Image 1 (spheres, rainbow, N blue to C red):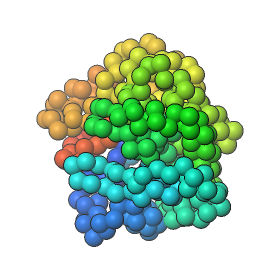
Image 2 (tube, rainbow, N blue to C red):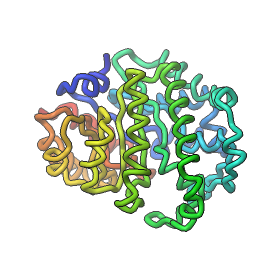
Image 3 (cartoon, one colour):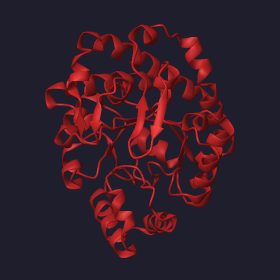
Image 4 (cartoon, rainbow, N blue to C red):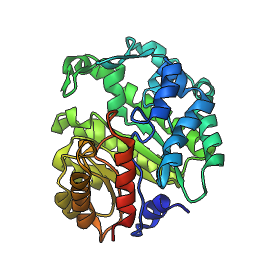
Amino acid sequence: MSNLVKILSSKKICKSVWFMRQAGRYLPEFRKIRSENKDFIKLCLNSKLSSEITLQPIKRFNLDSAIIFSDILIVPYTLGQNVEFIKEEGPVLSNFNLEKFLDNNKISFTEKLQPVYKAIEITKKKLNQNKSLISFIGAPWTLLIYMLGAKKSKNELEYEKIKSQKTKLDIILSKLIEYLCLHIENQIQAGADVVQIFNSWAGLLPTKDLPNYCYVPNQKIVEFCKNKNIPTICFPKGIGENYKKFNNIVKADGINIDYNVNPLWAKKNLKNVVLQGGLDPKILLLSDEEIKSNATNYLNIFKDIPYIFNLGHGLLPETDPDKVDMLIKFYREYK
């Protein structure tokens, strides 16, 4: 059993480290593959390359876990929306069509995503038994924002686009949760050990709407995972002190805190859950001493509770891989 699974399943204190976006643009070997594969979605659906990219950071660094190379938007893509990645703007999806969305079926959904499940199978066979393979999904609310084209800027929503679908939102959410649970089940069957749920835009929700669009949908998915005996980690980025309510309602095995959450507050208020992450990815752009100092702050605070060393968001493209290696070695030597 890997340390990650051990911590999440039995709340044991032991060393475990992996990083969000550990397979990505900061690695020259990834950039080489990416330069030869311009269509990002097609790259995600290339089983051989997806597995190779997943394993790149495992070959470089002393990490406990691999996270399958894919994208949260692979689900809306499979459900019928085109996904285009525009430089300086990010992902843009074709117009949402409710009739087309509801016309999907689970058999064709699973067939279209076979390359992802094949990538998990390939990776699992190559991965050392003492390392975990993490699968993931985007949380329903975060996917809804992309699907309805409601993201105005990095920190702002076109809420009118959400409100315009208000009468249909329950139908869309319910069906989306069904497909997300199917995607999880298929990833488990392919060999995934842990599921992480990325709720990247949870912080854009008004507090009054958090229960309906954040807490309850996540709780349903976590409950599904519990019934499948697979550990879950949730990352409701940007919800501040509402992390406490989220944790009390959703009851995931682990919860990733973002870099705006005070680690002392998290330790005091987030109970009966394994904490993960928190370190600001920008810290890795600083000197070795500054990186070590910031990491030590988290490690000292969390040393007497189950804690997974990670970041408060994904690794930045401009990160030096040598800094990542240094940080992992520092963590391994920390006592």
